[in-house]
Length: 350
Image 1 (tube, helix red, strand yellow):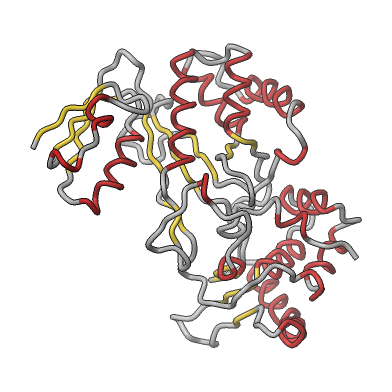
Image 2 (cartoon, rainbow, N blue to C red):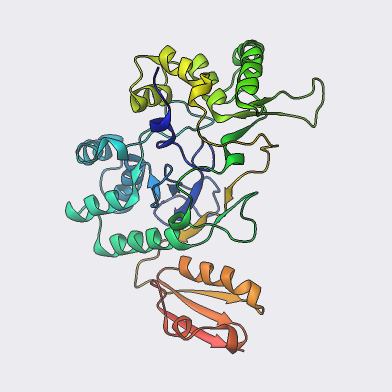
């Protein structure tokens, strides 16, 4: 029987779905008023890694288009194949996406930036901006949850293993890309997994599945992440995501993985059943790229010690901007006034 330690190393600590930790605008030619404007999304890394990840192929396609290169996927696809060939197999990860079971592989953002610089696929200015954005995302305290409301984590300080409550997933409906045919399949799977959940609870001394009260509009399921994965393997065995999981743990096939997911001997990571509606959530950093010569001014206003941490994180995100800080002098460190992290200048007013 395979064990699932390797599986934990390709899953985020906050839950099965990697959270957005950074969003970069400014590389799209779509109007700013369009909320669906193209952007680059930085993703939460797998457990025990401390740099953001990215869908490198999509990011390159957008960057190439911004710089006037061919925007078609083939251009980015050729570059991606070369970049992927340089990566250690442990760094290429397919993350679970609630709406897309055939998501593309993601890699650490620094690996993408190094490749773009080496191949001169982006200007030095764009490379510098991306470097600064990664440095910011790594240190800003953005993750909060039931275990750390008062002391948020940054990517750099994320625990190497999921907290016990984070092993439980909120399940308001069938996880995955849902259509009318999926719902009855999910209901059948719930009935199949119900006695298995009872066996697991008896063996482990802790519930692994909370089944919602029938016909209650305010109640939902909560389940151990292994059981959610069991559902995904049952419904989408040929998906990119499930095939990645099978490969990651060295399973013979998807049935081998499914057997491991309901074996009580594999539940070695501490877990605690809870209402998973509120879990570990980040406040994603927001960046906008401006060419170095395009002077952009922003204002940051605060008046209390408690607000200074948020003001500092906002300041770090205003790369290549002129920041006007309006705050009591004793709350503004000298390095804020003289500039930091790519913010060209800071003005102080009382």
